[in-house]
Image (cartoon, rainbow, N blue to C red; front, side):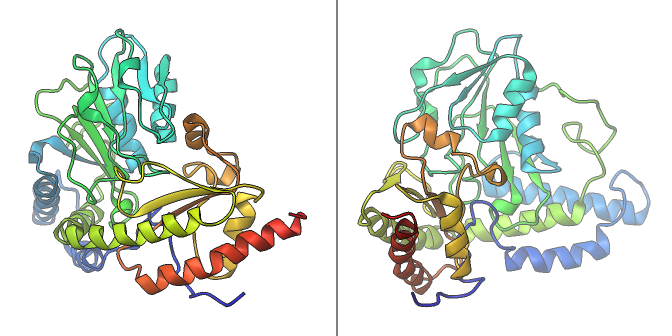
Length: 365
């Protein structure tokens, strides 16, 4: 088996974390010189920090086509999810969520004390008719983080506050029309890690589910990471500006991966083939252990994900794939970076069949 390309060109796990965008790197370095102070203070450095924070919020709002006063920077995407799900609840009814939500949503729903899981079809699309009438909030992602399927948010019933986990799609796709609150995570679009974005639509009732804090934004807590927020905003602006070209290129490359993976015996490509994220594809290989696949591909210079994408360290079968009723064995998620080239994909596809074949041979198949 030939040696594949080394990192970083073989890094195919942008759904976990996109490499830092050059625009974010440049902005971060500059912002650390001016954005170190407490943005609540009235002295010059404090006013500088507040100006940078307000600028970051305005840039994110423009990129997402929302109001600046709807945008809050949080400590992470998970933090934004928790604040969004729990903050817009009405009453004591259950948190209704799709069976393929990220673990952050599931944990928030469980913490709230009552949760109802909504079934999905084999593509991972939620059954909009299954929403209970007494739901206190409805949580449905914009696109699935493991298989890429876009969710039919417009078909969801009115009358229940809707939280949308947009972490997988923010920056890559325009925001959906339907939402009351939504969350994003900067490291998913090439911003620095540790920056979440919570957007609460103007007029939506939001009550903090956690102890309050006397910071600049009442929907957040803790000392604001002004340089990171500015870096996240710079990366988002760059990604939105280039996404039409990047999406078209990635969509075509993913089509190649889908076709090549489907041609391998006993391999199932999952997720909607059309209504999907442009950069992501998941397939499962029968008679192959997912950890072994990841390890062997990593040895050859290709970084991919396997198992449950949000709890991969447990090496348990993906609950997303289980909910879809598709093959969970030997699961591989490939997600392209903005810099992934046709040559990178060709190299990956050249080694993939041999890796699957050799792993099967080790167990006598």
